[in-house]
View (cartoon, helix red, strand yellow):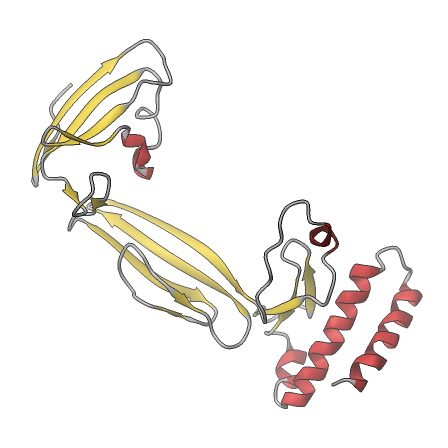
Length: 237
């Protein structure tokens, strides 16, 4: 196969097709010193043909940059760039560029979509993640703990802005939180006065708690339970 060329320097390769074995790997070297036992430890190379059990050999990259004091900390070169941005929601990012970033949550709960675009020369990839900011942090529970299965107590809540959609709130069973539509016209109206917003959120909690705790109840029973819960709730607001 032809020798790879790169304007930054020399790349030496020795690649062989061998009998299939899980021990067959392609090592990454820098001027004769092994950096990685297998190049598949780099996410970009964790695919065929590099992950094939038939392939073994080495790649020696003379211009590879390493983190000082280590052999496996690879520094990305000037051809690499990563740009971060908040696509939707509140909060701030510590930086707009770089490999690592930190997200500072807003004071109000909500759901934030964060995007990153990574480029290496002519190759560009994009990814997104969703960060759920709740009104409180949840204590971690060990597996097998009896208290972890019941999800007892009042759940936390977060906001999701969905203007034009009719739903006011929903219960996220997996996260154990109430998601409130902050784009709903009723929420916008209630938020003009702090005390009215609090009562509105309380009513939504009443609905979600009753629906979660009485899944087999009929419509009339559900309404009776909601009225009962709201009565005691308003006394404590």
